[in-house]
Image (tube, rainbow, N blue to C red):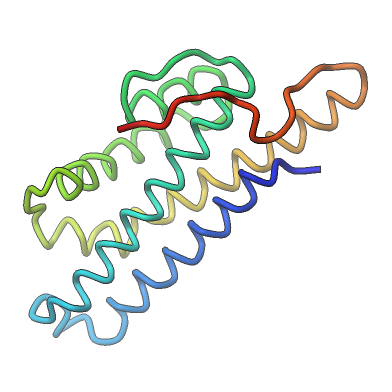
Length: 160
């Protein structure tokens, strides 16, 4: 059985990605001039990114993979321990730069938002799928004598 925290966050990521792309796809030409649509896309990118970080924290805590110092370290730890591909971790770190700027109330450039909406969000979906797939495999191995903490019992501190 999949960890309900991971499956819930995966669904949230999918929803946020769809909403961000929906806002951009309504009319890419007028997207730059429509602050309401830009804000909706930006907030959904941020929500998807936060859900991905929370997924990573869950896996890191549940499987005792270490203690990440920041959001970028979440991706590094997961790549180091084989949960995600190193190239995916690097792509996600680029998305983190945009999200961190927005989160810190710095104006990230609009072309960066468009690039993330068009291409960068695919990495978040791949990340979520990789964690849920690997977690299911870990569960299957645990059923054959391995030990795993119960879902949601990671104790990992949320990133701030």
